[in-house]
Length: 54
Length: 245
Image (cartoon, each protein chain N blue to C red):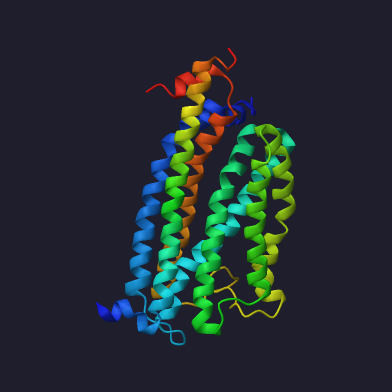
């Protein structure tokens, strides 16, 4: 296990690279969902204000 | 007749509904492929004969770099379609792409830098590949900044589309930079004519990551697209329909 974590001496480069990429992926999920949620809220708000056509 | 399906496809309610239904079909296979690819890349693949375990950075670096180019190309094509055929949905696709592409370009630069440090002895070099990838990040950020400068979504769509289309010249420059110029960066080992330069035990996890990231992009794009379509929609009836709990 410790040999795995050591990454043949490259641990200081390999693990931060994986951490950055996985963080970017997680943030993308959060951002995308937040955008959809906000757009829904704003669309409902427009409806309530009667700001839409028809 | 031939155009009816096209208009149906491009109609906001249809896009909103289909995108919502399609998302899990992309997201779950993406998750499975990425988990399997990570395990294969970190555990099963043998160490490289020159770079030891340091080469394992490829399993996050190459997919991130692939995303940076794929997302930009998608964005530019969507922007062009939106501009030429005045198609709102296409503009919504382009707008959805930018934050995804920017973040993965950032990941590609950081992971590349972390790979370069032990192998080249430097975190950064004004090398053709590295410089053109940095310009890609600036293009994404410029696109997003330009959009946010307009209150009117339609105007933001049209003006930012021009930047997206002009910037696409950078995509082939990035891809061929390691071939055209003398670069520190190694030549392509997967996306090349003829056989890849890796044994299957190294290559298969990488292909899983590349396909997994691509599906992940699809899933993110669909979620964002639904939001962007709603933002552009002013017709009450289908919003009420779509948002009915």
